[in-house]
Length: 518
Ligand code: NAD
Image 1 (tube, rainbow, N blue to C red):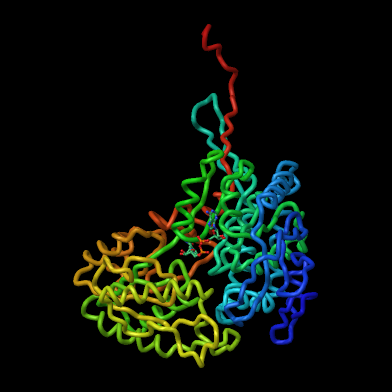
Image 2: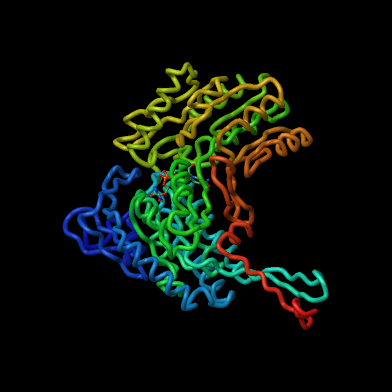
């Protein structure tokens, strides 16, 4: 195996230069990656763990699980960059220009970055291109906001006081990223943090560090001073070290509810720290008797199986009016059975493999549990045909049916290509059952009756509701959960505000009387 360059010669194109900064010299075996601290690679201790690409079934890279000293070094760089004002006090225009240039560099390398996304996640190339485009969009949007970080003025409290508020950058931000949209979710956190004037330590998922290393390399190329952003590789403890670190001012996390709970419990251990938690979901999809079933079937096939269902807002629990539920289940099952699984690089492919064999085993086990619970399998429910898949962890798109709200399928986030169809007999019942979920990330409502759709929407207790739509996210719109889906939205002005602190300034307008003698 080639160890001098990154063996990323997909379709005859060498993508290795995107990762040049992070490569460290190593002997035989897959290339070894180091953390990027202050712009340079830090070699991991030991040989590193081999990551198998779900797209190829072959070893892709080796990476270390960083010791606390690397986290310390990265935080120290970020602290210094912030405290000396090299980034935190750069003008809004200067910050905007770095982000805008980065958007251009990402766009210029869009095809290569999409290949990297495919290699590290296994998702189909068409979806990977969409993920890169979403990151460009986010860098562009927050580039604009970087010039518009403002407080407010309060003039008329009384004649003696004039006041204003200042939004200041929060300081050093720790960003903890999951594997399902490694580039997309980096785009939700890194541009607003930098736009606000924070300096940053990124901790990507150990399964998918490549795009984070590549995009941060492009940020340096765009003129970012290297201490302002570091990337620390590693597993949970590296993230936990960021959460606990006294010099990290805020942490923005996306990942599972279990990890989110852990972070919430530890965020105050060394100092009181604000955290943003984007955790799991189980999105209820309400389909009323007034819905257009053709549109619903097409929309929900995408909502359930896009990114192999590894989507926090996937349409994984469909609650349909009893008059349409059976037909919807059958038609959804037929569409699912017809989806094209296979080579992620083929333009015709609609679903790729899951992220890892371990995740495949977990989702498969949950499907088996569902069978034992008496849930009906309308489509899928098994590994897809071996001749179509080779050694990679492909799972057939699966449609289940049950009216048992206590079942695993109706209750738990399976985070795979699995959706369950349930039926309801009244809209009140549908809302009550949807709101009984432990999760509160998102919901969707399908109805051609505007009043009905709006009424349902206002009664659902989730952070986002789509009417006749699903899964879309835009940098202009806040995206965040409630209950076990976490708190503090990201994206939009609200998302950027998280990376700032308020300061209230009161200006005495008149000479003060002496309280004790007056
Ligand atoms: P995960 O919780 O296992 O890991 C997420 C990140 O947290 C990784 O970088 C991991 O190394 C790190 N981590 C693990 N333990 C930690 C600890 N104790 N302290 C600090 N960091 C720690 O999640 P995952 O499997 O990578 O991602 C899938 C999950 O992400 C799903 O539950 C999904 O719903 C959720 N998700 C949520 C959203 C959202 O916007 N709400 C978006 C995408 C994914």
